[in-house]
Image (cartoon, rainbow, N blue to C red; front, side, top):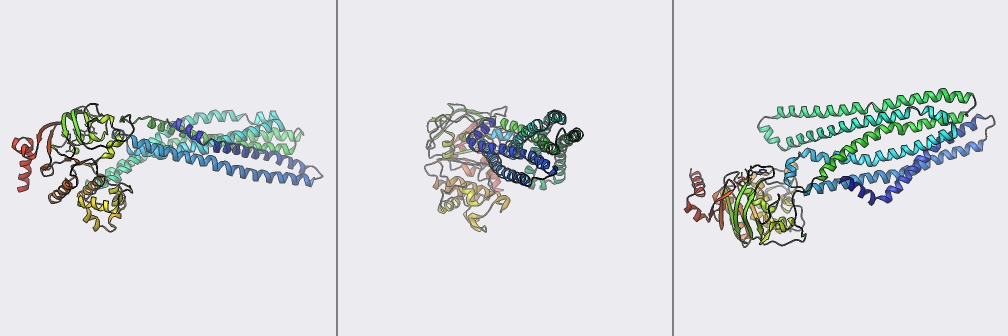
Length: 577
Ligand SMILES: Nc1ncnc2c1ncn2[C@@H]1O[C@H](COP(=O)(O)OP(=O)(O)OP(=O)(O)O)[C@@H](O)[C@H]1O
Ligand SMILES: [Mg+2]
């Protein structure tokens, strides 16, 4: 998947890549001309009668080489390294899009730190491979070809072969070390994701950690993870730090051999002094790319390891099957469940059992039941966060599986039990970063959810920052901001999942009163633990271990004297005590 994306990216940018690579080859070629001209100039200087004009021509060539090398390098670096940055940006965007398509199951199976590592470290390693490492490799190959050709052809073949003898050994050695680095780098990445996961969890849960005086044990855990990442980094450094010294020692052998054999050849007048100097310069020139073979292989191996990790993550298909017809549908809010069962992919037992329920448009359904009885599962199944069996859930008479997920989620709104607010302004939290709502819409929604007065009390009103960078809201205030977010959408179906649990009974009564007026003619589902939140509903169902055990209006259920009546009595008694 990632390989394909990279290929597509190359195709899209083939012009800049082609020009970049041509300039890269030109720049290396021009650099490789330098020793030859230097050698020629030295030969001119060593004759008794110096030909000044010839020396000046050589100086002019050297200046031309420098300017040419500057221009060519400037162009290719801008194109090739610039493209690598664009590739990084492109991949990161695709990964984020991919993450957005994944269902809750995907996130519960993976650690957040791991997902962050993909988006930052792995993508950056891929960029390094297709940018600087590729550039170094091409530059090195051209420099080596031109230099070795000039050494053999213009100077001496035997001398070249002898001095370059250590190179095959260097190549074999660096390849072997490269493999070891790849394995160790994977371990570094894994440890990085573990540690970033820990840091994230600690920042998020700092209040619980402090309340339970867990700081020292958390520090201990962190130290273990920190030691692991440091150890894995050290083990990688141990392998990679072998590369440069081994290459440098091998090259010293080449220089010594050139000094002995080449020096003798100068004395025997087999080659000129200029050739000897040029040969030495060629050796120095090819030393750089050969030394960087190690680095290139290092970066390449890391990039390949990261590409492998990214491929694995891109291969994960969105688990939710969307309807084939892509055109969006306006939904009115007639809901029906027929013999509906539900089992979570990771669970062993059913969370919902044989649910039969009809909720016509404009009606309000109350759901009550003990904790874990399946209330949230029943309500969220309407958002298709998991695959549902066909022929079991119908919206406006249509099977839920034939309705595009986008239409479902656009027409419905839920105030989730674990409401989540972004570290942004109250305004953005309510409008969900959309510009379609006017100030009046914002005020209406917040008045109806009874958060308006609190917002006016904050320093910057609707522009007040929440969360990490701003004020923290109380549990009840958070719930009401979440309700405002759902109300402003004016959805066909509104679901409140235990959304009034943290507000006092007077506020609850008032919000319910507002909802009744505002949501007239629209479908509502209210999940609650308190009878007072559902008593006014057109129908109330009582869930017990995933099954509907009682149903009816408040009056009917009280008369039935079952579980509902029991809960009612307990809450009345609590109210009186
Ligand atoms: N993601 C999940 N994976 C596996 N099992 C789950 C998952 N979410 C919930 N369950 C299980 O499904 C059952 C019903 O859970 P659900 O959240 O619907 O209960 P609930 O009635 O909303 O409870 P509460 O009143 O505490 O909110 C529980 O037994 C729970 O353990
Ligand atoms: Mg729940």
